[in-house]
Image (cartoon, rainbow, N blue to C red; front, side):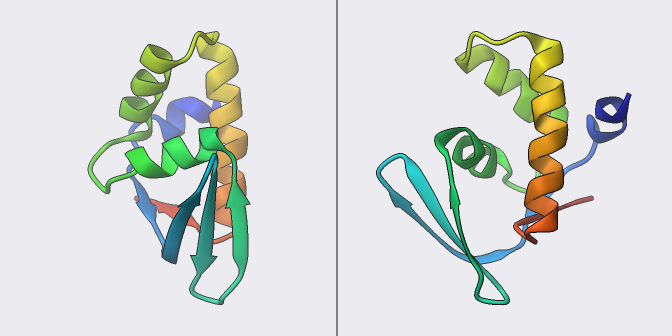
Length: 92
């Protein structure tokens, strides 16, 4: 499964600026694109401190939200792909 590969990776933020506006996190990337992230993606970005692995972040999500672990893993794969595509984060 793809998540097994992601599990040990460390997400690194790669945007220029962020601002919280209510439940929405506004991100400005280095090419000046603006993205609006929901509270779930914002929580992921908050936890992506350059030290925590995707697995560490998953554990914090499971502690905070009542969600099925396999469903969360599928959602993480989609969200990480989307954030990488938008150049908001990279994986190391």
